[in-house]
Image (tube, rainbow, N blue to C red; front, side, top):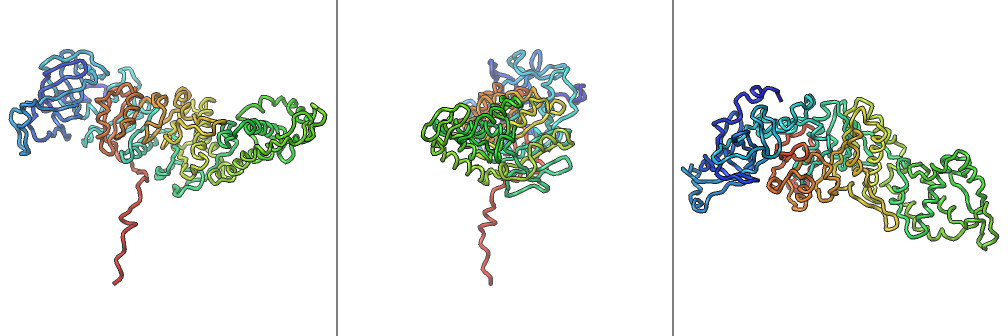
Length: 584
């Protein structure tokens, strides 16, 4: 955006060719105007762009007494007496008395053309209304910045206001990601195209983008700055994609409790005790036999000495301390003992010795069966049965290497045992821990979560062991100050908690046909009202409204098609179901 106004808009803003009417009514929220060309059967073309000259959705400028006002046409109607004067002849109706309603959006300073939300000074009756030039509307993101703001050298060229090249809309990454971002829209609205376009624009610069690809549709990205990796065995993999694992050492105690779902008053305490013992076996291997601490009819003295040897008591109670989960069932059996030397016959008490089998193992059989099923399930093959390098190590390396996009494909992780949700949450928690440790201070990272409704606001586990998958919610609430920002994409905004959506500073909203989805967007973004949200169900595929804290004036743009188009097409029924003609 040039600093000189004449250089930015050499032909001026209020062009006589774009005059559309004069004000006839003024209220606090909206104004009405008489349309000058109401009887024209079509719009007009000016300087390479099409102007509706009073069509619904068109941005307009009102020439006030003190400043200019920016508004948007939200309604056009005829008085009842004029209604029958319009027919299907497609000819101009001379003297048609049409009235339009304009929603007031902001004020435009006459000297600098800086745009601010709200009405600085209301217009008067008779003030003239002009269609806003496309290049002015396209520059709204930069015109809404303070005059002393930083110079914008890094811009993301996302779309355009009209087919005219001069109406291209470019946005600074600070505005898009600075307070987190959400890309919303129903299936077929262009949400995936927008996500792909944003990623393409980011990797043109020295960006750091981590993409959690839930379905594998973004596997088309390529180039020297792109790295593809996948967990599990996806149906389709990108060229050069590397198989990765997520070691169980990345899991914390709450993950295992929610995953294995201990029930009742016995299973939970025994499982926690077993995990504590396995942590000790990991820290002091000499106290264990084949990785398991034997307790049935065994002395407590070696275990007590091991705990005191290195002062590891705090580590034993640390839910992040790793242990060998493959030994969990065997250790649970060892925890089912009498505490102080009692045997099956309830003999003499010996505080330095564990007793015999208490018989409680029978209460833990269902838990042990579930643990065995999870550990051997293909859904968790990338966790418990994979020799591949850890994806967390790849993330650590990505932060410091020259790559700009790390795509992690989760389509090979099944939904059985809530595997996909748990795996994504563990990755999110790893990113948050890195951020808290200052890992992104020198190079901020944006994590894009595709199909975010599958991962946010979820609870797993039974009544006795409930765990919230809240890693990405915590990133939304506190990640920004650590250099970690999140970009959510979802077709079901109503499934994202309102607390998370309220943290999104920028919303890129495609077509939303569900009333509940639109209501969630309205509540999450105080800058949008029902007049603006009423346009959302009618957006064309590829069109999006950009709203939010840094976009107090909703801006509707046509997203440019990405070069690496998402591979999200459904099956081709015409090709697959076509009968071949019989051989002659």
